[in-house]
Length: 295
Image 1 (cartoon, rainbow, N blue to C red):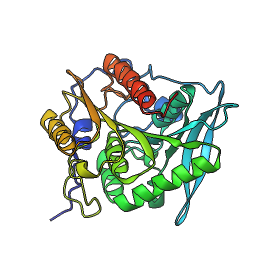
Image 2: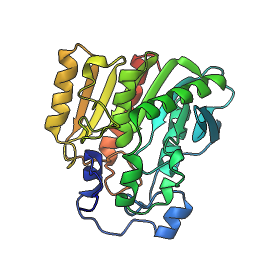
Image 3: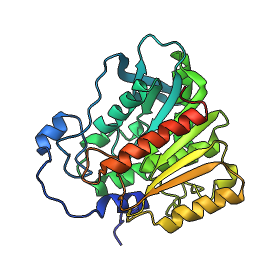
Image 4: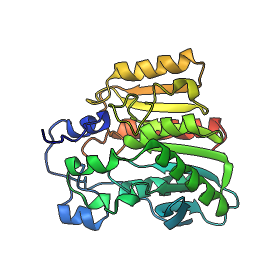
């Protein structure tokens, strides 16, 4: 029996999208040159690009238990003690969309850091062009190691002058799941925002508890942003997570966008829905302000 890659709900949502015309998309060469992954399908020509004016941005080397983890950071220039926001990526590695999100957060006043926590696999995930090749790599990441890598990222940001007493985390797709997991793990986290993070995991011994199972352990308020038309994350599973959190008296809010598919914030993909993406970004800012991450 050949091993079939474990199709997680975030991946089902990525791969089952409505058909679209190729017009308005970059050529593969242009997309690669611009630093985008090709595994998620063709890259939209009118992606959002955020400049580095007024920012310090670039590559980071983050000390972890077994070496150095690469990352990307962006922070406002000349600002002492900016709040720290972790950016948890999708399954595609540290490509241009995730870097752009860190710059967008820096423009809001945050010291944003996106750690490349799949680096131990020795493969540049951004260069892999199909999802079945990616899955065995990302699905073999143990939660314990992931959480430790995020803690190391927080320590690095603090060593660089970030104010980790105002710590937030934002994540997309698999990174949305990471937000829920980290919110149950970190006693210092002030708030999290999960964009379409799967509430339930497929069986995987490396992932002991799904976000829904972790409801009793949540330590920080989380905002969950989901698409009603997500083919991998049914609204019922989001409602079950919401109910589990409410039952455990945990602070969480959810917004489900009518007609929006998985990846509605990903402005480089065909799944992008501008109205939902813009509203979700505004909701994120309000959430972080409410819980003292952003001023």
